[in-house]
Length: 132
Length: 132
DNA sequence: GGGGAAGTTTACGTTAACGTAAAGTATGAA
DNA sequence: TTCATACTTTACGTTAACGTAAACTTCCCC
Image 1 (spheres, helix red, strand yellow):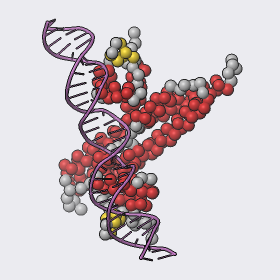
Image 2 (cartoon, chains in turn purple, red, green, blue; image 1 turned 120 degrees about the horizontal axis):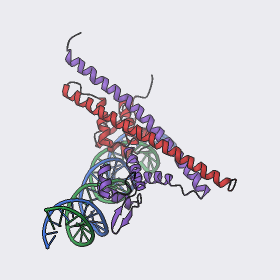
Image 3 (tube, chains in turn purple, cyan, blue, yellow; image 1 turned 45 degrees about the vertical axis):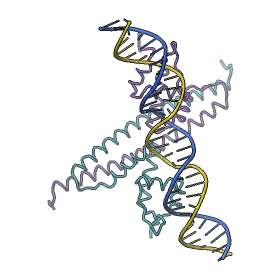
Image 4 (tube, protein in one colour; image 1 turned 135 degrees about the vertical axis):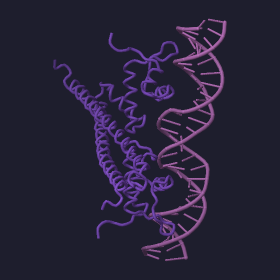
């Protein structure tokens, strides 16, 4: 009725612009565990979300190990108090890392603006060589 | 009068929490070019800024090649019009990449908040087992 | 003048994250 | 039936970003 319920490995590879090798590698590393129909992998919408998380992590420079942690934060095995507290600790650490990245991005944006301005100035100087 | 004018490789390594091997490696890759006093490397404040840029790039998941580009944006060889225009193009591409990272961070922050909330709920449920 | 600390070069080793190739299976169209 | 396409496993290859070790010089201190 609504969205597609399963995906082939090729479909996901095309959608996320990675190779099937990459997706199988993530499975090797225990990041996704698609169902099987015979030999063939069958991915659920939840698997697709997991892939999205991994690739978003990649764009932020996360290693696969870090992304694995993020994914586990999504499925808290909420029976043990200490595990939950440890998880909150990790969540807090991630928050701080993200805030650092935010500061880095803002600094870089400022510097790109400056660099752009210097380009403009240099171009203007080229157009009007001795216009005082 | 004001700040220190030169730095040894060891000083910078300590300040930025990397090994001297790392700093020499960056030199190998053409990212920094410190002066020499005899054999010994002598780093200027500008070299120090360059290192800062590299490490900030690292925190954002940039490769050294990408950081090299960023550094070159900082020192525009402002004599050629086409080079300047190409540089502005690259600056624009970087801007877009940073904006993507911003969106990724915001999405992740939201999800971390959700995950944290689920932890809280699970913990609360543990404390008050059958409080209706 | 003998350490010790910090610097140097050279070079092989290591890890992550896939790439690439080989060889086989399944399935639908012509 | 044969061909193309998409899937599978297995396994060796590759690149980036350093780590690590060896062997050497310089300088300072007691």
